[in-house]
Image 1 (cartoon, helix red, strand yellow):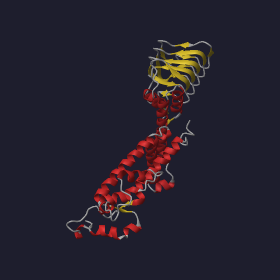
Image 2 (cartoon, rainbow, N blue to C red):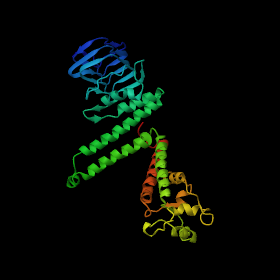
Image 3 (cartoon, rainbow, N blue to C red):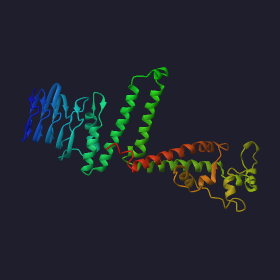
Image 4 (tube, helix red, strand yellow):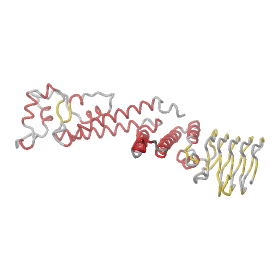
Length: 358
């Protein structure tokens, strides 16, 4: 034991500047009115606790230029006012425990106040004996937000949700198998684990687990570009037709199909590859029908709350060409994905996704 100050109560500070402590520095449950200063210190717990500060209460913890050559640092349930550090903490597995560590603010010129600058510290201090503890992420997100670093706080909160879902996936994969699961070769457990992994990916990309809802706009824009690009290709391929029973049975449309290049084996040499385009530009037949727009069709397809009339006016044919086949089946996927993105966006902006997290 290098220092036994367990449960001590004092209005003065504890100064460990430049010390080399061989054995455990134990301040578990101590109530220190001033600072605990560890600047330039070296801790060697010799395979046990290097610093045991569990449930410690102190006005400020100064941790700069500290070396931990052996053992662990436990700040389990410790409460400090100011955290003054340089970001250098033990990072090996089970060498740092930050579960329940509460601090009011982070100060000091060398103290990282960015999410990325604290990432290694969080990852090391939030996993103990293979079990993830989310509290260190929640605490840092709260402090960064109160310090005015809202964007960094959202990033930390996103990491927490990703780690929680990943932990859940691992628990499912490693859980003891039920008789039914064993009988089916673990199929159901593997299915749920993959489903959780996929759902985690979707939430991260679409809305940053609810903390970055504007990402949904980029997702919708990407879906729009895909739908519009595919619609444009299908239109040029000639695989669109008016979406109306009346039009499809009209003499004008039947005349357009009469000179169609599909099917190829019966097509005339001067056939028309895009009867819909020819028909819609003919003043005597379809000029007054809604003009086709690939951009309009794409946004009509993927944004459920908009109705530009394109999907009501035009429909792809799955039998005229490969592009039409892909769009005919793919439109259901695009529409469903658009609904999913929109619902996640609404859940994010209304706070439903974050309500039980903070």
